[in-house]
Figure 1: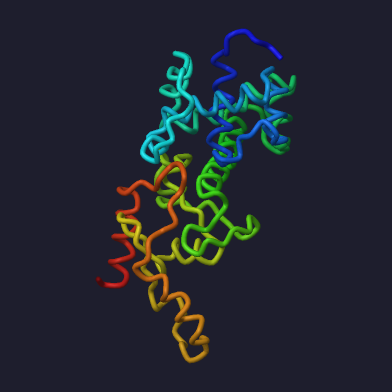
Figure 2 (figure 1 turned 45 degrees about the vertical axis):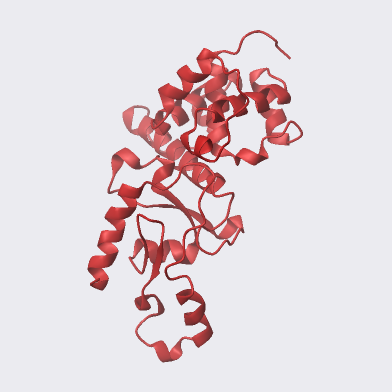
Amino acid sequence: MARDNWTEEQITIVLYEYCRNPFGQFSSTKIFVKELGQLIGRSPAAIVRKVGNLASFDPLMKARGVGGLGHTAKLDEVVWSRYYEHWDQLAYDAEILIAKLRHKELEQSLDIDLSNLPLGEERKQEVKRRINQCFFRNAVLSSYENRCCITGINNPKLLHACHIAGWSEDDANRTNPQNGLCLNVLLHKAYDEHLLGISPDYEIFVSDELFGDKLKYVDNSTREYMRGYNKRKLIMPKRFIPDRDLLAIHFDAFKARHHF
């Protein structure tokens, strides 16, 4: 493996993977870490160390007492500062770099077929949209370690990366993982429809409307189970804590609907 200084391109790709994978999963024995090392020309152990260095700049990691490995390079801070809160640009830039290292065109590297769209700006925007959607999902789910932040359900087939401010409502936060919650399929829909509220203090509120208008058909144990989540706190993520301001906007709409 190469032992020369890290490049900005290599650090950018590692930062991208840092955001997309659970922090605790970075081990030199993991297949995805080995594959990443082969791609960028670094040993798995070097990848793990670089992830630790990048974590030292992450505000939430600092708050949790995770300080990284120290001895960070100036370039680590340069790359972190460039992309922190500019996640859409990170995702696009990293995928371009990955495609280049794979000696493939971007669409081929992403394994997407856009042959139905003509070359030009429309096609480029569709590529970016798909990259952003994939990054958002991976970043949100990995931050919650693939667990629903209300129930703790951890079957990936049942989990969604839910936007707090909707995709069509807030362009600036479409890719922002702090605009995301990991929810199971049912609760994602309930949250979008304001049948479930989450306060800026991360408290859960379940509306009786969740059960429909014919309560006699709803099993009492189901109602008691769901009502048991009222006033409980979210299961918090390891990274990308939900933005309180975005939660407040969504929660205000929930309160307005239910008049409290």
